[in-house]
Length: 41
View: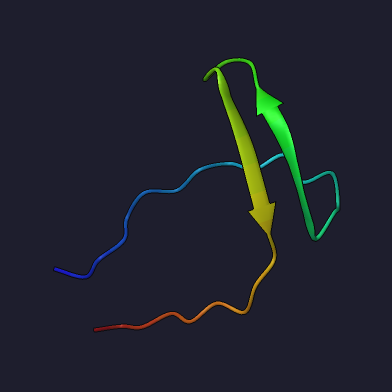
């Protein structure tokens, strides 16, 4: 419980925030670089 194991490749093109349309998945993707917190719990 509480374990996140999925990863998704992002096409950031060097930007800290933005959005793009992923044609393979048929989805619009939004992203923003934020401070992350990792645990070993």
